[in-house]
Amino acid sequence: MARDAGQAESCSDVGHDASLIEVFFSSQGEGPEVGRSTVFVRFGGCDLRCRWCDTPQSWRRSSTCRIETDAGLGRFEQRDNPIPVAELTDIAMSLATNASTWISLTGGEPLMQPAAVARLARELRERGQRVYLETHGLHERALSECVENVDLVSMDWKLTSDVDWGPDDRSRSGGDFHDAHESFLRTATQAGNVYVKVVVTPNTLDEELDEMIARITAVSSDIPLIIQPVTPTGGVSARPAPEKLLAWLTRAEQRLTDVRLIPQTHPIYGVL
Image 1 (cartoon, rainbow, N blue to C red):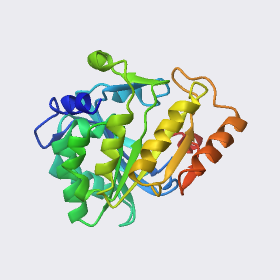
Image 2 (spheres, rainbow, N blue to C red):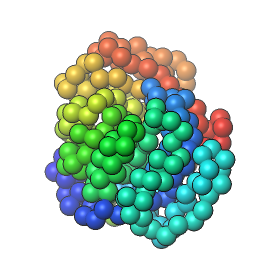
Image 3 (tube, one colour):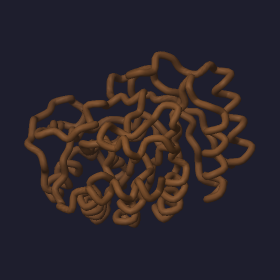
Image 4 (tube, rainbow, N blue to C red):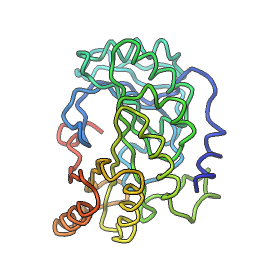
């Protein structure tokens, strides 16, 4: 599996322009930084298909993107893709309300555009802004190009009960993601901080969570784990039962030192 993920990276862009879906200011809606002011730079393109994905418009790259013109006011202008990273840095900085505002590089899957992500992260850090990378955690080689300029890696741990490769990557279907995730996590520990997030649904199996916990523990039992109950959307119509969520929480706490059960909050205020 790790070999397959590496092969996917060989098709990544080599330029310093970024193909985007949108850039906007909001509040972080999930994970341990929930509620923090954040500028979201959403990259276009994703090689996975999650049944519960809330941004399917990011699966494919687009000829245009939208850029918020005034932080938090919901006013946007359309721009042609791709956008030069130097210009994108200025856009993100103009929307950041202060130095503590996170700049989230998200998607889609941002590490499918590793050169653009690496340069953007470096330029943002040089200008004193904190960089938050939100990734599906499968492109380790791409991560190694930018990890030294990332303050926080938010790594999703994908479970095959609800996730598969996209239609252009079906040759890689049929295995799980654990090997590639564990390898990615080892590289992610070189960032300022890292945490693992796993979205759980009524399909989630105890044994796949147990394997995930074992792999995280093999890297470090101190890596935070966020168990995120699915927000019903896409192909998922219900959350796991409360007693199941609490059982998973206590199960993970037996092996890991920092486990939290945190749902998404951004649907409350109308942001995807």
